[in-house]
Image (cartoon, rainbow over the protein chains, first blue to last red):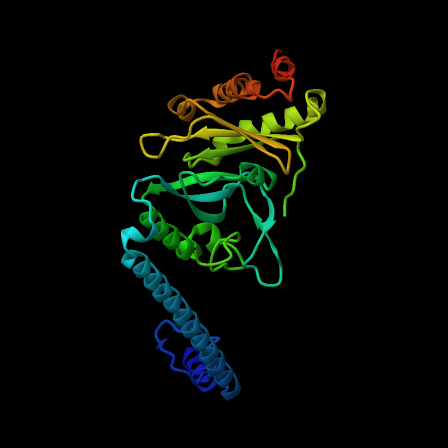
Length: 191
Length: 132
């Protein structure tokens, strides 16, 4: 009798869908469930709308970047060999990497012009061909190492360099940062 | 931006992905800048930048050892090849030995071409630093 009274009371209090195992009086659903008030529902919907816009905007931005990259690569491919490319495999795509933890100049950091890089992280991508003078003194001054990423013809290197610059945001070292750079700190443009 | 006014500078030209392989270079740099003074060997050169070249020549083009003098900055850049296969498999002690040997090689084969620096004294003082 006492058990039946208790059950009836609970049914009155909790108006949400709740299933009871009346024999064992086990409340299966969450007892703390309370219907959403109208105000909270609207707030939730507004936040959801804003998040949708932001994610849509972000998606469109990266889609635009990808299309730009493909267009530029296509332009490189269409340039004839005679124009100016070295056809022998004497060009390199390189990255300049931090040799120690520290602050480095940043051309893509918005309001700040420095970024903290950990040892081994990439500061810049570039391309160089035989005969071009590498200024190692400058690299040494700013604690950078010249790392060879790829060797090939000039045209191949231009394409690889471009792909590396555009794909930089997907690198783990970039993803873990609060400030998301669209290209390495030392690359002023997408080239 | 990190701007260091070191008399003895070091950097690498390499395809070795493991950046910790060159920890010995930082150690060498600190020792030289602490213990040696470039003014003891020359008054016409303000900085020597040593470039360790560690590149697999089967995959990338070979860079010959080089010496360059930058007039404006009065900097000498020396580039010496490390024995790649030996370096890449070396333990820390052997790595450091290879770095020291390459430095001595740079002084004695490349820096010796210049008349405005007492390269013999520099080489002797460098070797003395690691005698013990």
